[in-house]
Length: 328
Image (tube, rainbow, N blue to C red; front, side, top):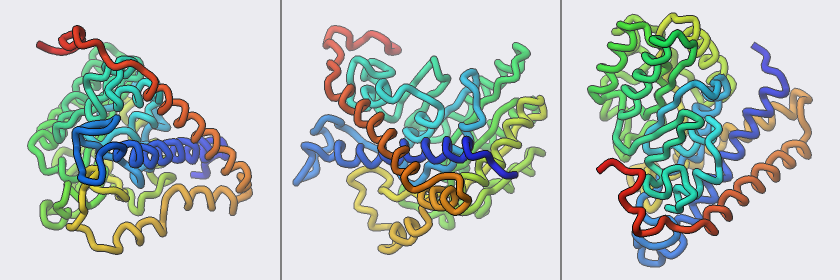
C-alpha cells in the first residue's frame, strides 16, 4: 500500500516531536541530580522512563485512531500520549508536578490521564490491558464503532493479565487491539531468558484471533498492520494482537547504568534509526526536500520548547489541595 505524502509527513512530524521531547527530558531530568545522583532532586524528581527509539509503534498505530478511541499505555508512555494527541503543555506540566498538569501534578509521568483524549497509563505492568478491554466492551454495548488499544512491553506478555484479557476479549469479540512493544529488554532481562516463545504474536492463535509481528521498527509496516487491525475491530470482528520489534536507545530508567546491555548495542541500533530512515525515504521518493524536513524539525522543536517553558513557569499545587482529585 502506497502511503500519501501527507500521511508520511504526518508520521515523520509526530516521530520527530516525540524524539525531541524525550531527548529534551534527558537533560532536564538530570538537572540538580548530579554529580552524586539524587533521585529526589531537580525539577523532575522520581523515576523517569523515556522512549527515544520507540516512536514507530505509537505513531503507526495512533495514526488510525479517532478522538473517541481509548488508548492505555505502560509506565513508558510519553510517545504514546503524544501520538494520541494529548496536550503537550499539560503533559509536560504533569511531569514537572505542576498544578496545570493533566492530574494537577499528582500523577507524574507514569500516571498520565487525559479524559478529553481518552488516554491513560500506569506504572503497574500489564494494568492497561483489562482497562482497554473494558473500554472496548463499553463501545460494543452502546453500539459505537469506537475501538480501544492497549500498549505494553514484551515482558508484560508473561503476566497473567495478558492471557486473561486476551481470552475474554476473544470470547466477547471486543473491538480492542493489543500492541506489544518488543524492545528486547524487560528492565534488564533479555527476552530469550524470560519468554518461552520469541514471537508473542503467535500466542494469538491460542485465543483464535489474528496475531501479527512487525519487524525492524518500521513505522510504515506498523501503520499498514495497525490499519487492518483497527478496521477489523471497527467492523465488529474482534481483537488483534500486534507485536512490534522496536528499540530502546536509553536505559530502562534515567540513571540506569545499563551494565546488562552489550556495549555496542545502542550504537548499532541507531544506524537504522526509524526517523532518519523515513526522512531519507521521503527525499528519495521526491516527496520532501531536506529543507522541508528541517522546517518540520524546527516547528516541533518550538512546540516542545514552549510546552517545557509552560511547565517550568506553572505553579505547584497548593499544599491544602493534597487530598483533592485523588482516591482516599
